[in-house]
Amino acid sequence: MNKMKRHLCFLLTVVMVASLLFSVNAFATNEDQHEHTYPDNFVYEDEYYHAKYCTICGAQLLDPHIDENNDYKCDDCGAVLEHDHDFGDGFVAYDKDYHVKHCTICGAEVMEPHVDANKDYKCDDCNVVLDHEHYFANNWEYLDEVYHVKTCACGAAIYELLTKTASAMLAALK
Image 1: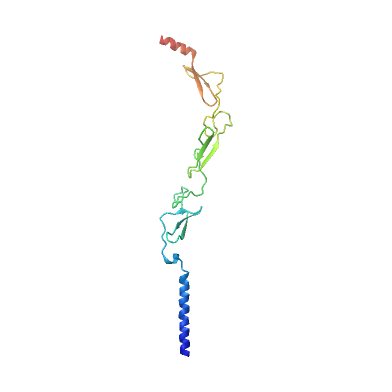
Image 2: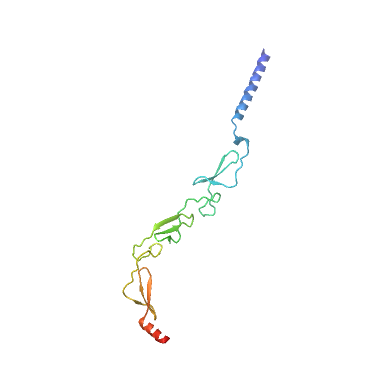
């Protein structure tokens, strides 16, 4: 009987170990059964990380963004990183109503309406001449030996031959 108990205990031990091994393998995942294969390129994940995904099981590999060349773009995934916008030279005319400026780092665009606080018919920010009816002062100003000029506040001008010079030129042509 003792021999039988020992065999039975041995047999139960083998069954328990086998079932324990089977249950561990039953919960093993694909991840445990292969070496991950990732594509070459990272993809943007969020403002702090980019990721690669295993082509077999989809496991995620996260890495922080890197900007070793200080251009505010991630060297691995190309994401534009947080930065203060640099609008360079400021606004440029966009159309008759608006001007724009672009960030030299990320290309972000700011569009605003033209402003003419000093009433010179030019946008104070981009210097474009705004639509208006020209107003030319009544007084002619001497320009040179041939012309005198009237100027609008926007810079537009009308030129007229000086009378004496015009007469002298006509006489010279005869």
